[in-house]
Amino acid sequence: MKNYFKIVFLILSFAMTQNSTAQDLKNGLNTKQKDAILSGIKSNIKESYVDLELSIKMIIELDKNSKSNKYKMITSPAEFSKAVTKDLQSVSNDLHLLVRFEPQRSAQNKPEITEEEKQKREKMIAQKMAETNYGFKDAKILEGNIGYLNLLQFADIKYAEETATAAMNFLSNTNAIIIDLRNNGGGVPSMMQLLASYFFDETPVLLSDFYERKTDTKTQLYTFATVKGKRSVNKPVYILTSAHTFSAAEAFTYTLKHLGKAIVVGEITEGGANRAKRINLSDGFTISVPYIKAIHPVTKTNWEGKGVQPDIKTMGKDAFVYAYIDAVNKTVTGSKNGILNKIGYALLSEKSFDDAIIVFQENTKLFPTNENTWDSLGEAYSINKDKENALKSYKKALELNPNLESAKEMVQKLEAIM
Image (cartoon, rainbow, N blue to C red; front, top):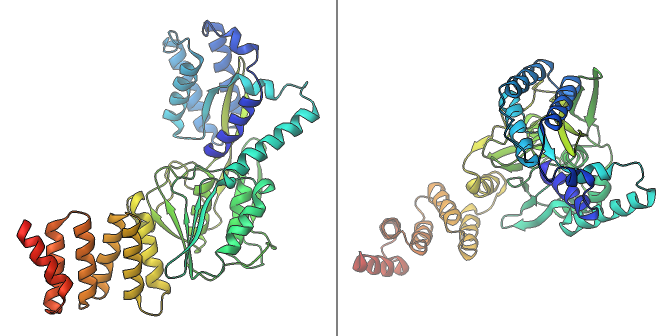
């Protein structure tokens, strides 16, 4: 969610000047102002935070730190918000719980803003999001008819539905789809709902329950019965994750994984499951309060504080190549040897040397008696300046075919310089 709202609030900040609060605090925060801010924080988390027991513990922590004069010497609004956020998160371990100093937001919510100004602001937000293609950075068809989508945020479908539909239709004829969320910081549930709907049939499927403690109410999120274009119901789906995958990106990953619709490849995600709302405090401060808990229909829990666990655990930088290899192994019915060799050389041409080596290594495991697979692996090692492993690979190729001239030449060349 953080990337999505960062875009929105940067636009709003640009569109309006900071109000008088910023001027009021040019000489720093005083004790009275800090006490008022802390009072607002405590009131809001007690009233709305998803876990009442944790909210009480956080209030105790803030009171303890205030009485010990921990905040006494802090006068910078930015430093004060960071210190309080750190203390709240030390108790809750909730990365959605944030205190910020953003006086421009107070101006945003002032009643004197006209409907015309609101519409202008809405238009500006839509235009700015369009400039990033609503987070849809890349969609392509890879060798072996594997689809790839690099998604950087989950934008509201009131802006991004057309782009999302185009991307999913473009990928609909592939044998498998890889969705890259390694750099996705989240967004809003509507995009998660729309994209998930493409992997189910017309019968609505429960994606998540949501519980709000303040109102003691539960709502539910289902897939759409109707989507524009072609669904991809019965094909393998891979979701790539990193330690930076967060919020709505985690919701999409966790939901599809536990509904049996996706294989997660990469790192454990950041661990932010609770939905938050932004509340104005005094003196230009705000607090983001997690107030709704996501509950998966299968696990009856969520990924808060734990992150989403990958099915294929690997470093984030290697997630793509391992997902790609698995997709090829599961879907290609013809010459896998030839396909993997093409993929390896395509990666070499892109200077993705480590990924290419992983692909060629996989090819030698699948086809250990094929001299060309070892020859290709030797070439990849050589290009990557790993002479020792290059020589071993070329020698293996020669064992399988003593007449392989390319391997002969490289063995002679490497032995002469080692």
